[in-house]
Length: 448
Image (tube, rainbow, N blue to C red; front, side, top):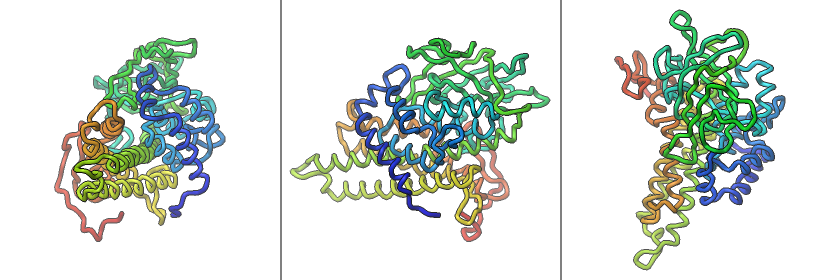
């Protein structure tokens, strides 16, 4: 493994950082999240059209840049540094990978070039708030999370002209603006119960922030109602989707293969986890940088508070935690590019859970740094006007999106075989789940 970045990768970082410093300050972020789309559409068009951000990890044959998850992670680190509200994660890390992995030649050629240039945005729709489980980050993605015939899921039934979807899903990332929805739905009834992925060309939102059924003349999906939800982190817009006999197209060819869907979602989880981990590292870095600058200027008892040893020790601990998280995020991105099924080590051996562990460490680092930033800023850190609240809310929102941290670590440990003979497994509802006579291997027997 060569840990040094190439000149091209450094250029991606430099170019993006310079642009975001000019166009995306704290005031700009606060203004953008209050618009109906929830992000600056002009800035997004520049990032997508001129820099090709959503197409970084897509092959050049489909209009992408032809790089990989490492370059996408570097871009996400810079967008995280600016706490940029955008559909980048939803489009590049959640929607594009399953289309690339499972889509037919017609579906790939029709959708991926438009996603790569930002002409279209997309997202992954998973019912029941089970996104982390569906991506095999906090539990087995065996399809039970998709509803399985129970209320609260999304059901698919064949029709004369394709498929029809019925159900609902909440907490869909960028779901109120995405034009391409990759929907996980249960089909087959009891006899052939399985979970497959479907494509829905959603209605184009007209900027009113209202239901997704409102269109501006573009192609739409009848029966689809989209409502933007109130979220703790306003920079990470989420929506509630209601589907009432919505026309859909099966992703892929033939009748669908649930095993292939499960594998594609797990591979998507690796890319999404590495991208989100890098983004969390960028946000934590920005919070720490601003805090260090503040304690150098804020005076107490006639001297800067940064000169007090207790403050220095706290900042030093945050720096060490941040650097550890950054190393883990970079490794996870490299592993995702080396092996789309979960990463491979220098010796070629698969390393299950590397992305989930990196995400857990990055989320924990961001949460700790953001909390300390609020404390060390004193009274101003608790105000709505200060940017410290952006970092704190991003930390809490990210853990709700693909966490929590303890479940990421627990599932990664089980996948790596750290527990034998009936390991403790987190339940699908976040509870303790089943447990057996867990036997922890001796440290020398564990392969990391």
